Image (cartoon, rainbow, N blue to C red; front, side, top):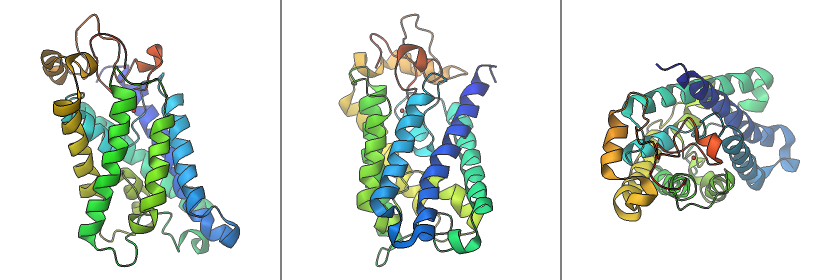
Length: 275
């Protein structure tokens, strides 16, 4: 592993930890605070705002996924190697578990027990098949926003704001139905810490399916050679050991994005810079 890869992976783990500590922590606080707690809107804002600031803050390091579904979508879209995605996912899951264990240690069982440390769960009347479909659609929205505001060179320079808003909007709709994880790690960390493993496959299949659709749409329907990179460059990128292309004109990749003022969601592109 190249030496400069370590800071990116550490940032992924730390960022994921902070994201879930705030997001899942807000869910736990709803039990502690009772009627005066954050409620659905507060939980949505906690997740959305935390993600927005963390994506922006860690862009300079080259981090900013905090979600196996996002990393998977970038692989589907030809933007990362499978090996590199695997390293990102391990870092994300590690950060998620530490967040779950930290919340369990800080709160009493009476506080975290009712929500299983904020573990996503199916709502009343929502079966596993419906849950998978809901999670897929919610993740599709999130990942399309990632591609459209952080990966595409035509994207407006919004930092993590649009991505955070997408998460908040998804939680407002899907929170009562599936927990609106949109992120296998968001389920994994609290579930491992609390032992709440029911219907575990919902929060893996749904987000990964939605992410795959978003990656395919952007790669084959929405992208232009200038916005996402020429096919030959994408192939070189997929073969590169660190997921980075050779083109001297490439301005954007998942480790040096911070030097260009963009989120670190994509491998190198040609032309002008575009979570």
